[in-house]
Length: 182
Image (cartoon, rainbow, N blue to C red; front, side):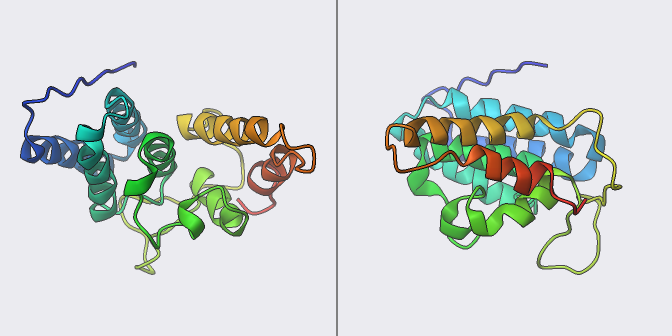
């Protein structure tokens, strides 16, 4: 399902927040819709076209995801990376090491989240928004995998111009795809 949300200049921030809250509420309350809700928010952030006047909209998407405890989900990571690509300055502190879910220090956490073996950090109990996956791979991995792996490849391409830097992709693959922990 491809969706496009076009933000009109007259759209008030209050309406934007209400829209994002509805999407986040569905993602939290209806687990089988979480991935589609994530896609909608990724497309919404992309539709902001990195325009300065929409910076606050991107910031609010992350704030609402945090409020709904959806940041540490595959969809939350996909949205984070999408915001990172165009509005790096709005990323909140304290969520990911160096504001980067792909940082070396975050790889085991990233693997658990992408494999949907996660729990909210603030709570010791599972909630409706989380699920513990079995050790087997999902036959239909989340679209977030595409965004994560594409981001690693893009960073390698940028890094490739510096001959001293070696590709991170093989290590990222081993850390998040081949890792033994489900």
